[in-house]
Amino acid sequence: MRKIALILIAIIVLITGCAKKENTAPVIEYQSDGRVHIIKDATFEKDKLDHYLFCPTEEDTSDNCKWKIALSDSVDVARVGKWYFYFKGISKNGEESPISNVVYVERTEEELKRVME
Image (tube, rainbow, N blue to C red; front, top):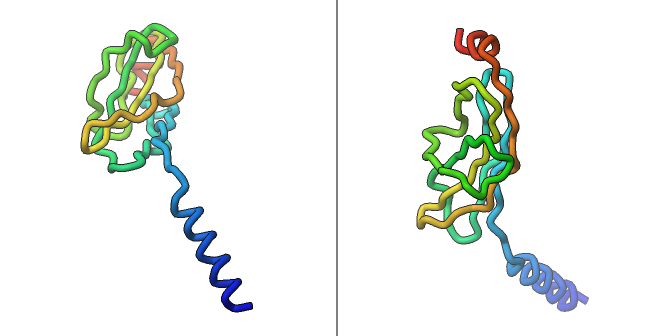
C-alpha cells in the first residue's frame, strides 16, 4: 500500500512539474492619480522580467505602436486627448511578453491641471 502511495505521489509531482508554463502579459489600469499602472507583472517561462515598454496611441490597436521604455511600473498621462495605452514586458534575454489589455484614457485640460497640481 505504501509503495502505491509513493508511486502516486511521484506521478503527481512529475505531471505538475512538467506542466508547460507560458509567458503572460502584464495587466494595466488607469488610476485617479493620472497614471496608467501595471497591476500584474508579465511573466516569462524561461527568464526573468527586465523592463517594460509602453505605447500611448490614438488608435484602438497596438499594430502601429511606437514602443517606449517605461522607467517604472506606471506612466503619466500628461497630454490632453484620447489615448489608448498598452504595455509589454521584456525579459533579461530580450524576449517579449504578450501585449497587455488596453486602457482608454480621455484627458481634458481641466483634468490635466487637477492631476498635475
